[in-house]
Length: 216
Length: 216
DNA sequence: GCAAAAACATTCCCGTGAGTATGTTTCTAC
DNA sequence: GTAGAAACATACTCACGGGAATGTTTTTGC
Image (cartoon, rainbow over all chains, first blue to last red):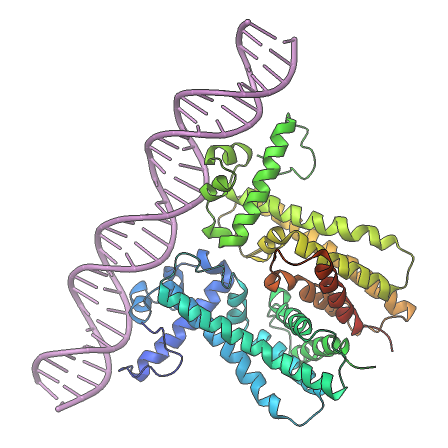
């Protein structure tokens, strides 16, 4: 039961143990992306690891719990990439572009995780979820709101500074998230594409998105 | 078996029959939105109609088939709203804004259908689908591409006319779709909101999106 | 007004997959 | 080196839901 496994659980979890958990989470994300949250069976996740159910249920109490952990991991990837940029002492438009670019990269780099999040989100877990699980989910959704709030902060920053023209900060935040997260719907990992290709995608996308908010 | 039921099937379908089908599709969309594609059971869809399974399986061969029909309906809503605007003799930027606004309205007005589409899309049906069903799905995906192509056409139009500055038509199309479709993720129908509120949302959103593509 | 088919309701079957129970092996602490 | 717990594998249970089979009622064509 790793429900609170965001940080170390103060339990006797060996180095090998948490490493095994990590692999399970990753395998689950891949399976979720391939077949969806429901179609992906626990047996399949285990098979992806070259293992069996026993291993999975030794580390996680339920399939829902695995999903929640994938969710948390996905959000952490986002925060880790964007939070450092907030302290940059640059105009809001440029900061926004930097943030959006970083977010785009995260989308592409951690595709299975980000895609899993979009597959149902809160719709999944309806009914078939314990009270504890639902509580964790609420926390994760709040986490997601906090993330979007980062963008709103910079939007407001630019609005008051006069470098941005934002008719509705809330709506602009939604727009930015939508345009960026849409990446996971159409982006496909191809072996022939280089690092530069992904850079180009992220940068062009970010520039187009923020462009519509720049003050004339 | 209404697999080809896009248009009249040249079969003996009474007026009452197709009306019943329509209601089933609608109820299914609502259920899919509520509980997701898998969690929503056929029994639940029937219950939503104040009916039973028998009725549903009389009109549709499988749950998959219902989903496909919801998909098609969702796409038709989009085409119906946007196709007429293509013939307008106005500059590309304005035309794009009009199209985006119309699309935004469709998202809000037919929320259950549009949300259903996003819940898995092609990921659903993987494996558990007959050859015929997969074929229909391919057609629907093509339909979706055609729809996005409408936007790309206008984008290219503006690019050659010099009214738009689009570094990548393909990417811009993706961006527009992502930003607009994101609506179904956060928009919630509230009783107190008026027609004007939705107008405002659609227009502001469209303006922000297209704004980033305008030629300086 | 009467077959016959359409439009349902009712009942049952049966695979699938989440979760459990139990066994086996590997590691760790002392 | 030897308990004992962690880290798995194996085998089983069991509810749930898709779909089929079958019955009942309503409509339609002639």
